[in-house]
Image (cartoon, rainbow, N blue to C red; front, side, top):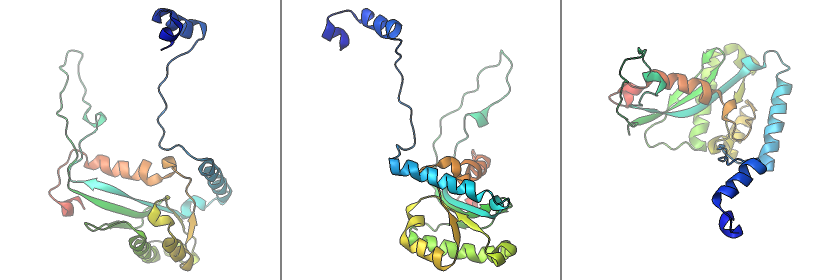
Length: 221
């Protein structure tokens, strides 16, 4: 377009842009979400609260985090998982591309802390993850805490960390948490790096299952 507008050659335009103006053509950086100013400030405020809370040397021992994930009847291996040792003259191994199965179940790991999984729960087929269902899961978590972490339960010292899913931020859920005196910690908007389930727990569990076929949902569980 520049060459046509100015009536000079494309080569001259390339020379001016690259050599004279030192410009380069770059692709846009892909980000999960373009944050608003309010969301950016929310990240700062939340992280400052975490820094302040971390002054307590036992803070990380008290945090219990949870999330949900889909588990598939068949999930193909990753490219890295299919690596093999080869000699320089060995033929390259070929592998047919496979897709995930349609059979799947949703597993809620609710929750785990530095000592391990506290409570896990499977979602029934057709069940929607809404506030009503989420509150029931929280009730099950409370009862599990009484048995699994009796000292933290007695002192009400546990802190729930959850992401900003609609079922977790709705008024019904917040009212239940307040009524049950369950302390929560905030989650910065769109921050997968601060969601331990997403970057630590679920990948480890799914990598073990990759490449394996499971007959039905019960076998997956």
